[in-house]
Length: 507
Image 1 (cartoon, rainbow, N blue to C red):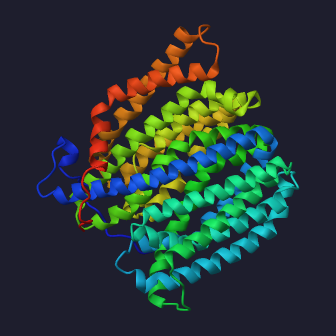
Image 2: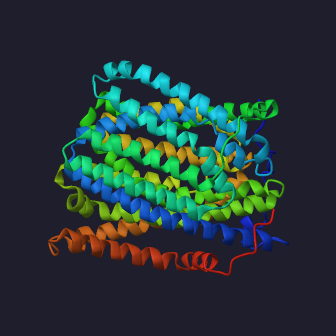
Image 3: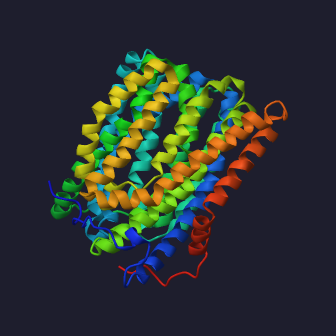
């Protein structure tokens, strides 16, 4: 199979070692400031989207049961496998070839449509079998409806990535928010009327259909019937490894749901799923915005290895600074916010949530180097090699219930972080440079969170009765400590975001 991108030298820019920009680095610095402003657009839109999602989750947690969340969470994990197979990376293929989009766009669209349609039919055929395996008849219609939503979203990925290549991140943020509003309205309305798990399923379907329709309408591109042999050949080489790595890493990050649902039961899966989904808010809020912008900008630097690695370290540093802040703030607030917001029936989620918050911080340490380099072949092979270790760790962790499963996920992620950057860069230098730039935020976040929780336990215990007041005081301690510890870094990011816009991205 062909390689997806040109190889990038593993030696980073001198700036990654001594902090001083290399000669002629002004253009990359301007590009990074421009990219951070795009991150701000996506993040600001994502903030509203996540607020809508949080509101939806809180209301549904009050109206629905852990069983409802368990059935929905298991179905999402199963449908996600179908989504990974259906999404052959056609949209991302265009991102990695920004100068050849017009040559390949029609072919990629029709291949994407054909494959996703076939897989939707296979999912519908397999749904009754899966319902018998999990001894849950509800799975059959739930899987089909969720599969329809995924079909709509996957086939709009071409339009979504065309918007990304055009740096139209403001439009993407608005579309995401519109989909979120629809999701909230449909979910709460159906849950209020007593539809149970169907409130989760139908609202997810409606949100995906609306998202797809808005992407198609906003981008404006319409496919013509055209298939190119050269495009098929290039897409085939790209998609084989893209699909393989997507499946491998999807299994890596969803084995927990599949195993908990099968061996611990739907109710415990619902408790775990709620903890997992909210613990990963920092990843979806900060990480996705950084990743979307980073993976659109970094391929433009493939012919300049020093600028590439310098930009990679900078993207990762900002991701770690903001991601660790959000993750440890959530960890600190969890003991008070869960009973206050979700109710005491979800108290069993608190400890898994706190462990998974550290897992979320670990996922924010640096950008996925496989995606940054477009090296999906290596990503696939690394993921497959890691599956046995992940399965072993989860098997051991399940002996200790949901807490053990959460710990197993954390250990797996930390190992992946180190291995992924080491094998992609082919030397220790990029790993050490990136680690020096990002690990202080993980260590500092853990230390300040521990101090804040100590303040809550030893100083506030018995003195403040109201949960809201306890949470506010504990969070205030954490925010002050983190802000003082990393004040210069936060100031530097603020100055880059609000500096005068650069005239454009130089390649």
